[in-house]
Image 1 (cartoon, rainbow, N blue to C red):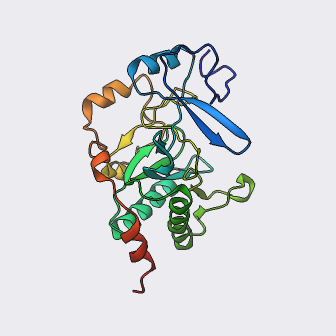
Image 2 (spheres, rainbow, N blue to C red):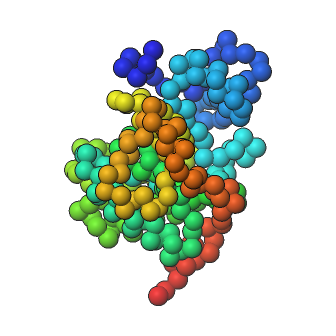
Length: 243
């Protein structure tokens, strides 16, 4: 009933969903969950008609649920100041460049940024998450007054939380072009890295009312995402080799 009404998260496919909607059953601690596989326009429209505002996606594909094809860093600020998010994103981009890993940037549509590394499917979630956390810890050591790995909000202060916990089995993330249930209905949009230099950049700056005008003016900065997939092997070796 809209972004101003009560809302909830739903993962399990409802019993009345039509048979033509594809499903996948995922084993989890405590049982299983049967999810929608939204792989065509008709399914997306059906979910919209169910009042689904923000779809969330796995970081893996249905044929190999335990092997991710992307590594995500969620930069989550605790206040409205965007500068710490900007500088943290720039520092992470430099680190990924040094490790020769591709990095794709998008707004969350909320307050922060997502940085995504496309992966070849070669290792499981635990290994990818451990590596992501290792990189995040390096960023925190660079600026401990500005960044944190502290999961508890009450302990973060005004620091940017670098969340790598999305890189775990059956965890979810809001994808590019998802509408967020926040004031103004902002949209998560892909960005070129040069956009970080723009002083007016806000994570919720593109909304459901302006997104199509925005699309008319920009090229897709994620056009090569699928062709940029990498293994983490060389980056891991480079990170741990002595200078």
